[in-house]
Image (cartoon, rainbow, N blue to C red; front, top):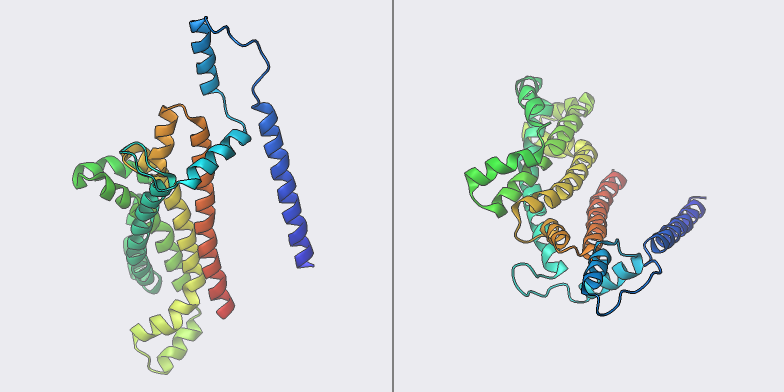
Length: 278
């Protein structure tokens, strides 16, 4: 039954994709019109400008995507790098900030989840800092750190901390007290109790927070790179927009979505593996 539903869902997804691409192709197809005379320089310029500003159909985007992906790591200068290099820089910033956030958020989340006193003491700070947009930290980070690369990593760190911290605290606080009492009965040390009893029980909730964080981090890095410039998929989108290369803009938007989906699937697979082992 499940296999049949999955098959029908896959067929429906493909059908919707074909219909969407077909509508896109028809709506963005070059309209039939009079071609300007070769000696009419003004008409040629206006025609070229109109062509540049037109949203390209999927056939043009696919050709452009093939060309970009066939040479993803070329480097012809600061403003002309392959899409593989751009993605590599963005992923490096995301994973660095994300892992640093995990090293900070998970231990603090453990402390908050196990100690009502620490929860009440830290909760006001969390409630004030958590709603602040990560990009609001960028000017201050650039002024203090004075390095765009490190500032972007700091912004990723800030936006990744809160979902992991709160989910860890929630998961730890939700561990059944009976299990902790059994550990005390067996005279386990607090550290061993944390690693052998609390951590396995809270791991699904912790992984949910990590999954949310990586999605937010990937969203934020695009906007951050538009602000700081340099190299990265966000800067690539902004630079191609400035060049009025809409095929590159659409290609990069779709690529951002695919990479974000892959990151989510990776952590989702880890979460399912942990749940299965339990």
